[in-house]
Length: 314
Ligand SMILES: Nc1ncnc2c1ncn2[C@@H]1O[C@H](COP(=O)(O)OP(=O)(O)OP(=O)(O)O)[C@@H](O)[C@H]1O
Ligand code: NI
Image (cartoon, rainbow, N blue to C red; front, side):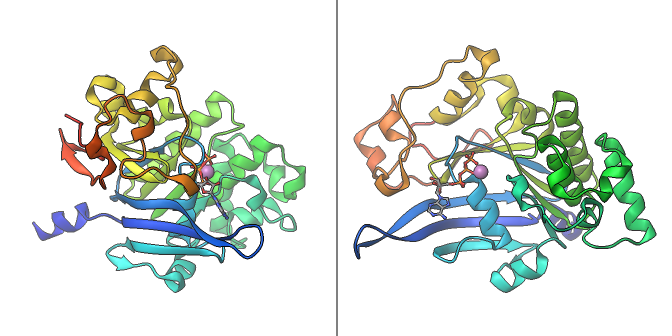
């Protein structure tokens, strides 16, 4: 019984995370820009949790907060644990690339002065490392000679596959993939997602940040929907496959309806800028169900087996 409980315990747990940047305005005026507010998320071994949400909703910043690579002027509150252990900055640095691997959103993260093969294996050119590197290159249709290339010799799509390969052959038990598919053709994008699914099936935990949400529905177990720096819904992937009626938050429903296959019906309005966040529910200025009570702080609540940050959700 205990063992079962241990296995179901989250590998990564983010609780009530807020991130602010200390900013300088014109002159001497200073202010705090709150870019992540009260965000919670957990990922269990064997699971892929996809993160969906528009540009600027805090997806990459969450990844950077877990990896410990936020800029100097960032302040964090809340907690991030890995296997129940609090991840402070020192641990984040120790775990980076070993227990926790990041597929960065930008291909500029590749070291311009190191040959690609060596980067993928983390500097290890032993026989075993070379075999795993060649295996994954084959799956991603990367010719063997590419291991001798420098990053500037790669196309965008090749660089993306190299970054994914690095995380895949690491020993990390937690993989955070921040947009791993842009620039890949459909076949390669699907191959990358298939590789992530296999890693999860081996017992690793995967966080998949992606704009290709309709692909993510098919391989992820759960979907976290981000809006203006917080989680507004955590749902099973099947809920997204079944349709807007199964979803709980008006923004998740709007995301679903904005997909081309669902009629491409975008909602009016904009995500608020971090400096001018509305009181209470961050989605309320765009919400058709808005009432006075939405100006209060809105906690996550459990509804129909998922979690939602909306007092009107049923
Ligand atoms: N160093 C920084 N200083 C100030 N604001 C920042 C900084 N880095 C990011 N932001 C702001 O934080 C917000 C969240 O950024 P983030 O990169 O996490 O978005 P995202 O969800 O990953 O978007 P995308 O889908 O475009 O990658 C944005 O409004 C961004 O402008
Ligand atoms: Ni991003």
